Length: 275
Picture 1 (spheres, rainbow, N blue to C red):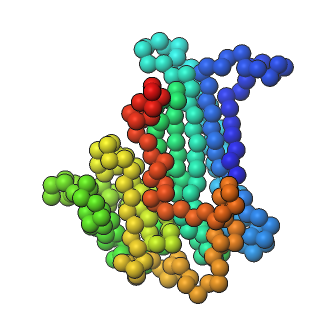
Picture 2: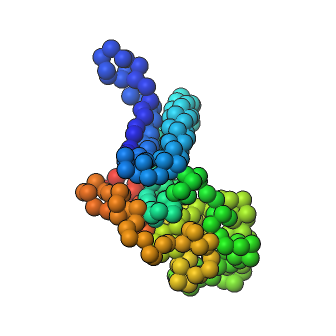
């Protein structure tokens, strides 16, 4: 489900805001387990509830902070005036079965409807325990965890020549990935294909490259994940086939390529608005 928060209106009697600008608008998600799922996986349904509470509290903070910021900058008159900020957080399910529910959350922020920014976060649940699990709990062994940054870099170099610069520039990317991995800052999800890694614009390369995705497939790295977090090929039906649907009633499981379409450089958006 999608829920929304607005900057409070001043004129509650008429229902019409007496101060339309500046204003803020936050669309935030809420994960819902249907009755059958909640009965079969009660811990997961409870885990969804905890995450929903966190999203709601964050939406309240975001609304207050962005409204205050726009009021300050608008009153300042320093030549850069913000009238509005619209934010939307969109969870995209990458994999959902009897072992994990894993998602990447596309977070869009749009100032004045002409300057969109896109970022990414992620969440992965252990279906049986209902706990959110860190990447280190999914990787099989210390050696694999230490080698993960090198696996990611080699994959990026192999899939797209645009990621390959000089040896010096490539070498400079490795410590960045290593630090993000050590700090628990990697945006990641488990999909039906493998381990999906997402880097925001500026994380590894220039802004023009946009977000960068890497998929370490189960075929290429069969021993990377603990067995309990690999897909169960013997399962009769996946969680996704039973309960995950899009607006048209069709099953909806996302890939990294699907998520990449949500990224629009602000220069292109500005040209469309001007046109």
